[in-house]
Image (cartoon, rainbow, N blue to C red; front, side, top):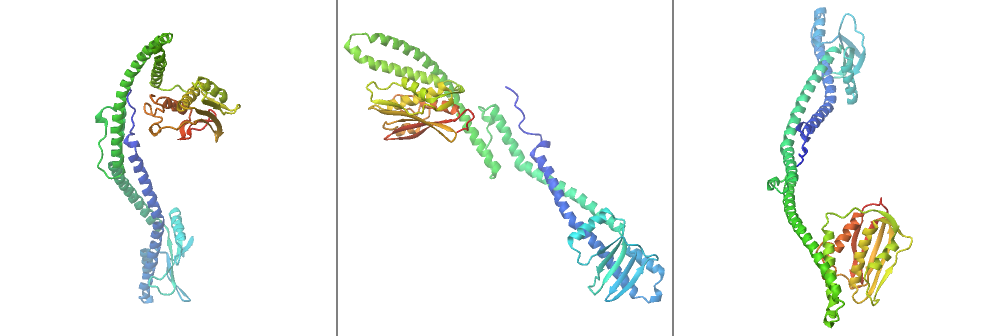
Length: 470
């Protein structure tokens, strides 16, 4: 036995590993979507804190006598608030509260009053990208009073704080993604991957040794889809194992029957030759019995022939050729034993120019079987007609008779071997073989109708070798 190829991938390339990577990617994407507005919010809060510090510094200066505010105090206030200048605007008055000796040159100005979120996001990423400017910021008074505050500050401390914040967010996102992905990985592995590996291993073992009862998987008690799949697999394996055992027994029995059939056919051939000699006898009793004996021997030989044909492993693949259908039907008519008194009439209703692409010998066998069945159904006379037509890429051949129709028992198992005989004493192989030959062409054989007015079988074949399948 060849070593079976590995059906299950290694864990590193399995479904769990892929989901682990995808979960990490999705978590990181979610963190990015969260980070974008949060970094803008961080910058806004930072600048508002500088505005608040400037406001507190202005209140402290306003509470001191003017002659007590010296240069050193101003520098200390500017250093503690991380500002380079601050000013107040109340009503129509603008007051410079603190400032460096040399007023700084502003690179850009920002107004925090009613700034839209999209603009705040853009300014946040601009600060991360640049980060070394001198910025002018305008904001409302923290206490809600009329007017506004103006500050000038270096952007570098803000930039450093934003970078530190972003680094913390990145580290936290990695930890969260790893933790989440790990939990998802473990959950998937326990709930799905391990059961699926057991199912796949059972399928592989069953394929290698279907006759071994140990290869059949145990039904699961789980109530989810995996449990249902495992139970269905166990049921299928049990049924398939039983079917294989039955077919093994039938194959052995079939081989024995085939050998018996072969030997019996030789015996019947000898009996047929002996009966030919008896036909020349002048004994009246022998003359009366001979037709019945000959028919019985011919019928037994036909049964043996059909059984041996069906016992073959498979029907040969059709050898397609293009030919006119009407002459083939005429050949069939010559081989069908019509009643000698002319009560059975054969009608070939196929147009002379209709061509078909098929295996001529196989199609001849199919039509001969259907034709013989139709003639056998006309014990008291009638008509057999064969017609054909092209229809939507198919050639449909109808074989009809005006007999009494098929009995219900025959219709129920019409195409089943040894079960669907349409005539008394048959073995039910003719229609089964005929249908198998037609299906080998990519078509089908079916019973179109059967009632008191007659029976019609239809052969559907693709119109050409490249036709569609039925």
